[in-house]
Length: 243
Image (cartoon, rainbow, N blue to C red):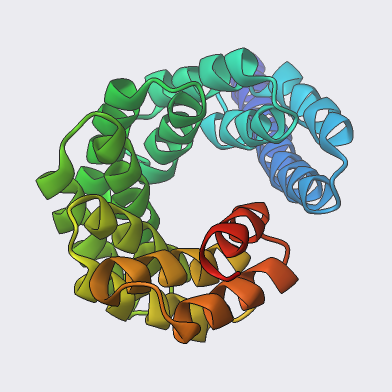
């Protein structure tokens, strides 16, 4: 009889443990959703408070740490963001997004080589990540790897199905440094089609036109458009070219 009672108590205890664990898991998921909503609302401190509550009963919750890192990054607390993403990666290094997020922090801190390493690891885990290719290209430009950058821009264009104006805009700027003005014009026209109110696209389109065909009425028309959209550089160029 005593053995039977001990067994019954053990079973009840195990059920209680599993029930508590299940409740904690469900509660963490709900809190994580709430934290993400707070970030979407721009309430970053509130998001961090929710995450810290999750950490009290789930210290190794790498998803929560990733969300916390995003909140720190958006608050421009970059050292905290970097450390938080690194902790998430130490717990689980199989998530492409964690490496991409840490790379974004490093890029912002101008650690271009470190960012390239993390973007590369993100791409290895998720080869269809267009943003990782785009941002790696920007870091490669800053470190002098221009051919690698062009290859990454091309891959980003393919993966984004030609719908990301940033790919065309930044590739055009790189092409202009190589005096490949006709190719830059093609890219800038695509960027303008995708984002017709982007002032800098019109400014660089004018500069590419100047490089390809010299100063013309078309250049001044493009500069006026850029100026009307708020480009300070266009105003200076108009004073030089369009008197």
